[in-house]
Image 1 (cartoon, one colour):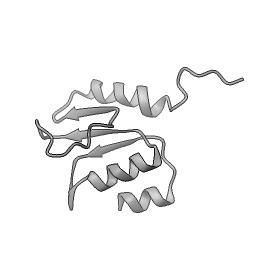
Image 2 (image 1 turned 135 degrees about the horizontal axis):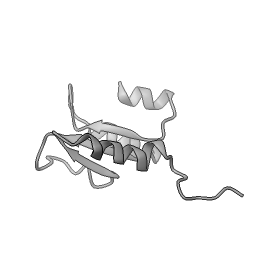
Image 3 (image 1 turned 180 degrees about the horizontal axis):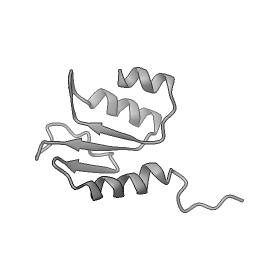
Length: 88
C-alpha cells in the first residue's frame, strides 16, 4: 500500500518502520530513494538485517526518545528540503 500511495501522492519526507506486516520495508525504501524522497528508519532491531539505513537521514532504534523523533522531523520533514536557502 505504501508504494501505491507514493505513486498517487507527492510527499517530502517519510518515516519508515523497517518491519512491516508483510515483510521488511526494503521495497518501500527503494521507491523512496528512486523518487529522491528523504526518509528515516524506525526499528526495534539492534543490528539491522538489511542495509536500508545507509541512505536514510536518520535511524531510530525502538524504544526511542520522542525528542529524537521531533528533532528529525524538525530538521528534515517540517523544515522541508530548502532549509537554509534563500529565494531570490
